[in-house]
Image (tube, rainbow, N blue to C red; front, side, top):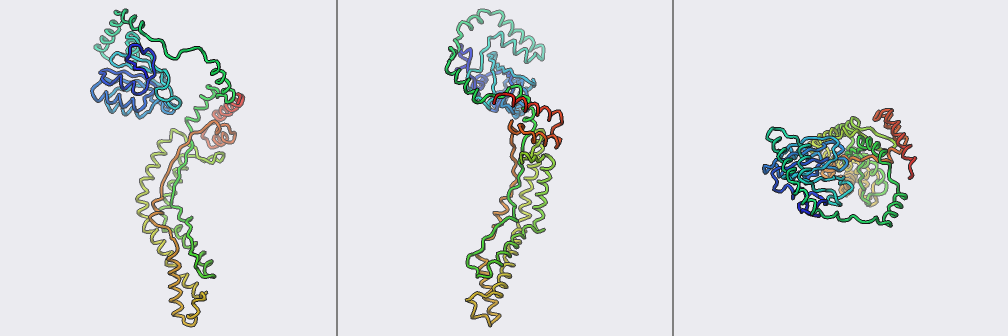
Amino acid sequence: MQDPKSERSLVFAADHRTLIDLIDSADEIRIVAPGLDEPRAHALAEAAHRGADVRVVLDPSEETERFGMGSLRTVDLLRGAGAEVRQLLGNAIGLVVADGEGYLHFARSRMFVADGEGLDAVRLDPLSTARLVRAFFPPRSEAEEQEAEARLDTALSNPQALRNAAEVDAPVSGVAPVDEQRLVDAKEALERNPPRDPDLTRRLNVYTNRLQFVEITLKGGAFGERTVSLPTDIPLGVSEQLGDLLRTRMRVFDSDVLESFRAFKREVDALREKWTTYLASRKKRVFATKDKQAILDEVERLRKQIPSLVSEMASDVMHSIDEAERVLVKEATRLLQDNPPADFGLFRDRPDDLAKMAERRARHIVSKISFPDPAEVLERIELAVHFYDMTWEDFDDEEFIRELYEAEIIDRTSADELRHLRSAFEAKPS
């Protein structure tokens, strides 16, 4: 990257280090931009903390962050540091001025271009710098008005300085005759994979920015679905009956003893029903992005309940497993008495001894059964939320549009517009 403070760098590639180097020791800093990423914002906040006069004009809109032009978190960061932040909605102009050194910065979405890739900044002369600062940051007092006029007078009264600056400007590196083969390759690539029409894409983005898919999942706690393996040495004739009984006992987790978990699950279901709509054509739930923070707040509220829920359930789960073991020993003893294995032959005519042998064998069998570990069962309880963007492929589906309309997520006008967009896209080469 070229040094922007070099007198020959009329045009250069800027990254966050460029801004940091410019403002490192500046006392007066003015920034105009669609948005700021966090490295740049932290540098400006540090300048404000050390006493620099930092004033910023941004476009603090949803689109700024969604299109990769900056983070809205930087607004609070700068305000917290004492910098002045004002808004200019729809702004696409980038201006950086540090102690009178001015540069135009042509911001590009960081979703598609890495920071500092390609030429995107132009060094300004003193007159243009003074004019732009006064235009974006109008004087707020008589003293500021006099200071702005003095800067303009200084620039206007020294035309030789402007001439000297222009004479040392170096040619822009990289300007060359068109590479004909590269042009042919680009055209062929576009023919193979034609781009979407920008105007149609922009209109479709209205919907992709306002609607998203979401999955709100309660993980763990599937007590009724637990499987338990029987030992292989259960006497013939007892195995099947004991297996049926074991499966029945494991369903003890579905009983009223775990009502607290089912009540929590109902709250999660209520959250889904309140904020989202299930669309069969996508087998997903959709919501309005304006409600995203409300969903996150509700999810966080429920997550905070999980530790107390787990604590409340712990003794119930332990009791359920203990009771399952007790009943299995009892029933296995009965089954072995009713169907004595061959090695019980010596005790067939001695009921008391047969009962003792059956109970001993039953305890041995049950001890080999791998029951669910209570701690493992409870630690798996988790409430997860994942958001997914919609794509053109979603809207290129009449059933999807119909479901959105019937669920009153979009009105008839929007449904008709989406159908029109589908037709318009399909009319383009693909």
